[in-house]
Image (cartoon, rainbow, N blue to C red; front, side, top):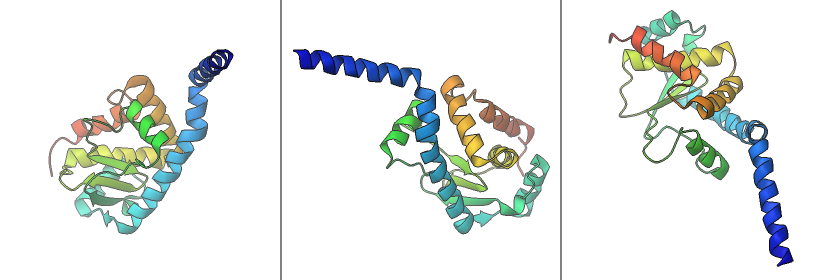
Length: 177
């Protein structure tokens, strides 16, 4: 009986510590793992991706990207996510990035835009993704990832400030090519 009380108290203490320091745990444990994975994904995308064509490069310049020649598009069956890392999988599900009923059509990892093969990157949709490239260019991949994850946790995906900024590009560049 004493053992059960001690174990129960220990579990409550762990729960309280986790609840009080979850942001520090996320920032110091989970985000570095995700950022390392995202940087590797970007490097791979830069190697295997397709450079922007002239129209796409002009759009990237108009959006403000300093180095549109570095941007690559990688068409894939599924946009990658580190599902093999259980903690990151649970974290991605908690903030609404991945999970049941969520289809990720495209995602930026630095200068690499990974898009599903069946997702047509129309001018407004590409503009949206290029704004994410611009956000990384203005700050850095690690800073953007950190802000985005905390913003999604606080505001939800659609109201996260970086998503709101990118969604504005959908409207500004709503006319197709």
